[in-house]
Image 1 (cartoon, rainbow, N blue to C red):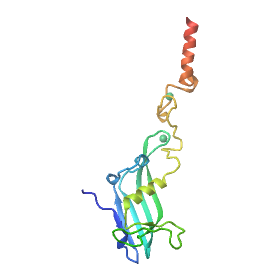
Image 2: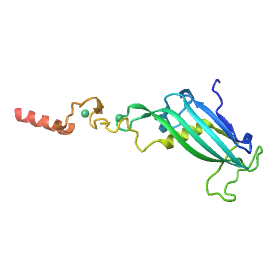
Image 3: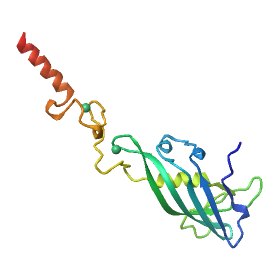
Image 4: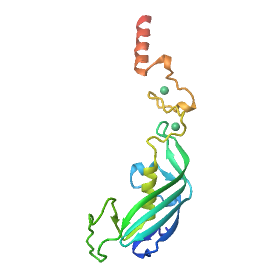
Length: 184
Ligand SMILES: [Zn+2]
Ligand SMILES: [Zn+2]
């Protein structure tokens, strides 16, 4: 339906290896889970994959570049930043390629996990890498003041009405009662 295929057919990779280049557009992004919705391409991204093959097994060296949109963990505002990341994924063809091929893992020297597959989706690889690439905290700026814990105002836009001398709203209420009591 107009969406270009971004698939890598592992059965078609020659013994000499293969190089792929994909363009991932923001429209291609279909977040599956909530955490994925917090990260999205902000413009076209370039994804290059160099696949080296040794029999059934393959090593994919990826390079992902572009600009993404993320959410600040302090003020929840969206902001953009550049991504330039290299990664490596291990792949393998199913042992027997037939309609009901039985996928067997754990043969020979498996220090690394090879995922048996006949075809992979470049978008899935990009999605996974973008999530892995996220820092513990995404901050729009190191000095982001975040949101007021009482009223939720964005403190980067200025102090809110619950300024520090007035303290917590619960205490303010108490204070108001006390003043009222004194006046009565
Ligand atoms: Zn922020
Ligand atoms: Zn406030």
